[in-house]
Amino acid sequence: MDRTEKIGLGVAGAGHVLLFAALSSHWLSVDPLKLDNAPIEISIADDVALRSAAPKIADAPPPPAASSPAPAGQVEPPAPAPTPPAPRVAVPAPVPTPSPKPLPKVQPRPPAPAPAATQPKAKPNPAAPAKPRSPGLKLDTSDWMKPSSGANPQAKPSDGAPASTIGPAQQSALAAEIRRQIKPFWKAPTGADADQLRTTIAVRLARDGALIGDPEVVSTTGQTASNRGQVRLHQEQALKAVRLAAPFQLPPDLYDGWKSFTVNVDRKLSQ
Amino acid sequence: MTTPALALAGEAATLSPLALFLQADIVVKVVMVGLLAASVWTWGIIIAFSMRAGGIARKCDAYEKEFWRSEDIDGFYDKRGKDTIPSARIFAAAVAEWRRSTRLRTVDRDGTRDRLSTAMASAVGVEVDALADRLNILATIGAVAPFVGLFGTVWGIMRSFTAIAAQQNSSLAVVAPGIAEALFATAIGLFAAIPAVIAYNRFSHRINRLEASLGRFADGLYATLSRELERD
Image (tube, chains in turn brown, yellow):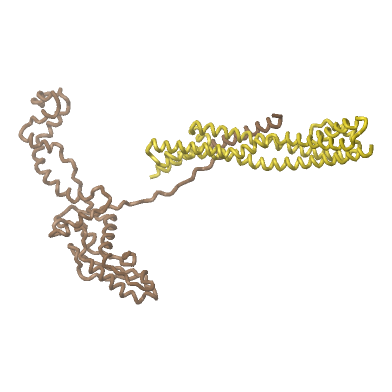
């Protein structure tokens, strides 16, 4: 190994150290890919049900409710709750020594029996409409059918249920359901450019899903010179499909959301 | 929403060569160190050879020009015969053989020509061999480094898969660092091999040229000395 090789090795070694130092110190390093996609807003399809606007009654009723029947008559109940000090509680007020727990319990006790009787009864009413909002993500269609197939669908919504709002999720679910029910009866006319036609129909429904009056054609868009002859047919077919689809099976508790609506009928509906 | 992206960015930021090296398995580390040493060696050879070969080619040209200008071979030999450049050594070998052959009582011209030719050819061979000494190392590194790097990568990826199996988790966060560090071995292998291959080809070409040029000088010298033999 002669002089030039030593020089070469020295230079090469120094060069490598410099290069890797530069790479390691982010001076020369490649920037990691910048994946700065803006977060996308998504809405998770909600089940169609009432969103109760009434104050929510706490799930957990006053805890003593379960044990309330027993203590009704006595003032002794604190005895079973905690441990050995129990016997001493028999003289509740003057004894501050035992664990602090029994004391606060004794004081609220006297008024307890009275509301305890009424509360269980009051609970089921408001709770019922809230129930369908289970955490599940799918449309719980089984719930819809029950009331409408039952004898009188009016019973429930009319009984002064708590004020409810129909959120956007419910509306989109309703629209999808309406389209789904019209779909089997819809036959799109065929012909040149016929697939561009879209007829908007206004529908008014009774609570049982039957039509009130005749559905009306609001407008037909997508008309071109070549499909002008199809327009009337398209409108007729659309009206026919809506008539055949009635009575609609829709959740009665959302009647406000579907008592009058417009539906777009076009080629996509038949796919 | 943005937390996973931030976490990934933070992870990626740590993938510097040093971090990759430190995270790697011992086998991969050995591979990486070996390849880095090979790369240093390659560049050492490249630098040394460039310095030496460039200087030698220039000096030989100057030397040969000067030789062809001078009228007196013996005088030129006394003046420049002891230089340490290939042309001078070839010239010295030729003159030494010439003197040994013409010192005999009866000069065998054909035998002298043969010996002159052989002596100069072997002198050229010695010079070229000395220059080409390190080129085989470049060839070896160029051919082998990618495979060594690939070995490190395969080993590292095997380790990554073991990690997946152990953690029962194939999320990108588990797999990515291992694969990145494994691929880093191949990167270093190519980093060492590419200059080695390029340098090997360039230097072989240069040595061939130098050998041809030395051969031409030897031929010219042979012709001159052969003519001198006729004159005696």
